Image (cartoon, rainbow, N blue to C red):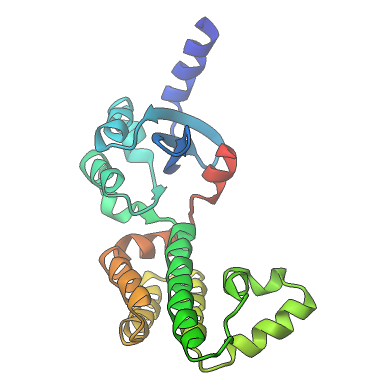
Length: 236
């Protein structure tokens, strides 16, 4: 116990610049814990019960003023409790909160799958099986496909299917994380939002609305080059 306290004391004194905050579920996904990690050191800083605003605020309040000011980025998903706790606890938090790329990809992937299911159901009623057995084609990164899968998927993605259009919109969004300039990143995401909102694909439009509301934090993630990938890898 004494060595643990010394370790926590040393950790508390150290300045941390890049932080990852995320929640994970256990006990058959009924209970949540909040995990905070130092992305540069690759260490867990704090594990708190549930995923409430107060949980994260408790950790922020344990830091010194100098430590809070030293934080340059906080990677997280779009969970309101984490956003509000950070906005209330850190100076210039609106410039530091970075919404995780992989959660954006997850939302878009789920939207593509909803479009596929809706379209597959409609096509089957008319006797067409164009999308039969294609679920994982749309969810798999092309570079991870076999040659046979790539040939099959090329025919699908080059088609006039609504699912193909939804997939193209998702892929365009995933290509927008390379910018260094926030100005140019903003222009790129504005083009994407225009396409997504005019797509007439309701699942895509719903995600586009969420992205539009959280675009400020996505732009931060783009230019700060941070995500929760390292943190969740540490958890695994």
